[in-house]
Amino acid sequence: MTDQNEWLRVESLDLEAQGVARRADGKVVFIEGALPGEVVRAQVGRSKNNWEQGVITQLRRESPQRVKPGCPHFGLHGGACGGCKMQHFHPNAQIAVKQRVLEDNLKHLAKVSPERVLRPIEGVPWGYRRRARLSVRYVAKKGAVLVGFHERKSRYVADMSVCPVLPPQVSALLLPLRDLIHGMQARERLPQIELAMGDEVVALVLRNLEPLSEADQSALRAFAQKHGVQWWLQPKGPDSVHLLDADGPPLLYRLPEFGVEMPFRPTDFTQVNHDINRVLVHKALGLLDVQANERVIDWFCGLGNFTLPLATQAAEVLGIEGSEALVARSRENARHNGLEAKTRFEARNLFELAPSDLALYGTAQRWLVDPPREGAFALAKAVADAIQSPELAAGWQPPKRIVYVSCNPATLARDAGILVHLAGYRCTAAGVVNMFPHTAHVESIAVFERDA
Image (tube, rainbow, N blue to C red):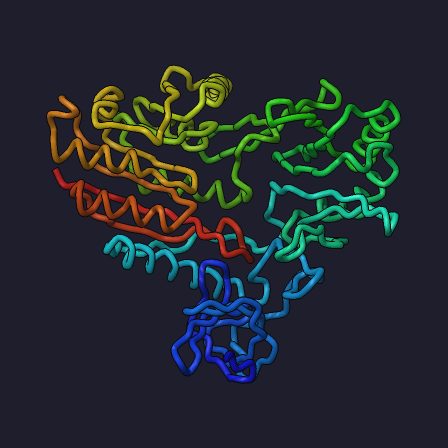
């Protein structure tokens, strides 16, 4: 039987930012709110044969890295916002834990140790979030509207008045948005507001399940004028997104170090943290060390976040992405920046690749790989197969250097194992990118080199 009074020493944090401890009998306990080095008691909510999960109830020895959360809505129990999990942990300690997660994944899943650990890429821990999906709920019993993130481990929307991880001008909109939606005729059919910020424009995408009345549209226009935002409507899927009024200024984010600016739509994938993205692009290109006479392939190129800066340095850049629509947008962005002569874009399924496909796209001296959470298994496997059986990719030569930008340390480790153990690459460097402070999300960057 579980002893709720047993004092537990927390050994580490897991990928969900839960403290990890062991009972006297060796059973693992995952404890929300507990930090490494602390001695705590926990109230167990789930129990299995080999592990338990609970919430901290008492603290006997406190970590020196424990800090006061910066948000009044942060907590562990009912009603608390579930948007952040690590606000009680010093920001520098958060980064150290994420670095450990990256190194442990590489070591244990891939049997790979980077030759050099890169200094973490980090920035300000507050006001950084330029993208967010805010839930909207009209609560008839309270006669009120809630706008914010979901409560911790709940489908309910947290009762939020501020959000310190949002830029201050956006956090200040939470209460006015509640009043706006409450006064609209369609208030029960407006489930979501998506935030997307450009360098000058704050765009709000309202998910409207039915056409809006003229009165509701007028209310949105008045709100936009008062608060300096731009309204978009989304009646169906992401492709249905359109401006409320057609003459709004474009959304842009800039990479000034390369003289590049990127037009985007509010439902396009762009990095949540624009400041960190700028540093990441600069760092990735520095690690890739492209020469003016070289050809580069940017796998999973998106809107051209890396492709276009690369085109300012390389002889030619080929960007490859999974959809024709996204490739068309990438071409538009290349033209917008006057880089169409040095770029080419192709659409294909990047989760189904063979060595012959590598030969089709030709030899490039350097690759930039930036996949989604699923990673780049098919690409890494195609490289290994082509190197082990050159006849499968006649005339193709592997890149000398690969820079891999990852949003999932587990799939990075899987792919690193293939590149190192089957394709003959060395992992010369790896480090974390703190794109999402106060969350357990781990972004990272790794460099792979192959001797001639």
